Image 1: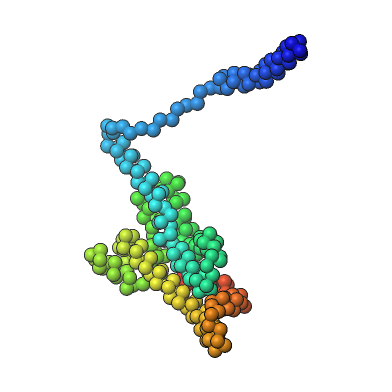
Image 2: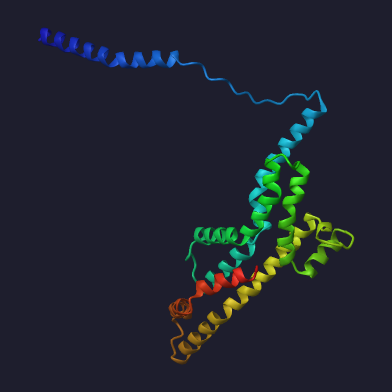
Length: 258
C-alpha cells in the first residue's frame, strides 16, 4: 500500500511540473516584453495665454460633442418625422407596434435622406476647405451654418420667427445672415411641432370615423360590454394596409420638405 501511494505521489508531482513549465515560459515571455508608455492626464497651471486658449478650445469641443445628439435632432427634419410616426401609431391604437426602436430608426434614416443635399453643401463649402487648410475655425463654422440656416428658415413660419426676434430684442433682419442661430433654432422647432401636429390631426380623422361607426354599431346591437377598440382595430389595420398607408405617410413627410 505504501509503495502504491509513493508511486501516485510521484506521478502527481511529475504532472504538476509538466503543467507548470508552459506557465513559467509564458511568464518569462511576458516579462521580456517592452514596457508600455504611461498616459497621464492631469490639471496644471497655464503659464501662457496660448495654453489657456487651447484648454478652452478642448473644453468647448467636449461640450459640443456631448450636445451633438440634441443639436442634430433640433436642427434637422427629425422632430417632425418622429412626431408624425408616433401619431400614426397612436391613431391606429397600436401600443408598441411598431416598437420605439423601429420608429426612431426609420426617422433617422428619413432624416439622412432629407438632409443629404444640405449636408452635401456643408461638406463642399465648409468641411473640405477646412481640412485643406483654406478656412479657419470661424470661417468654417460660418460656412457650415449657412446651408443649415437656409434649410431651417425655409421650414420656419414668419410668425414664429418674429416671436423669438421680439423676445430676444433683436433688430429686424435684412437677410438670412442677420438671423442668429439662438433665435432661428427654437423658431424652427416650434414650427416643426406645429406642422407635425397638423399632420397628426389629419391622420386621426379616418380612424376616428371607424371608431365612431364601430361604437354606434355595437350600441345598436346592444353589445355594450364589448370594447369598441377591440373590434375597430382590425378594420383600422386593414384600411391602412389597403390604402398603402406607410407609402402615403412617408411621401407626405418628404413632400413637406421639398
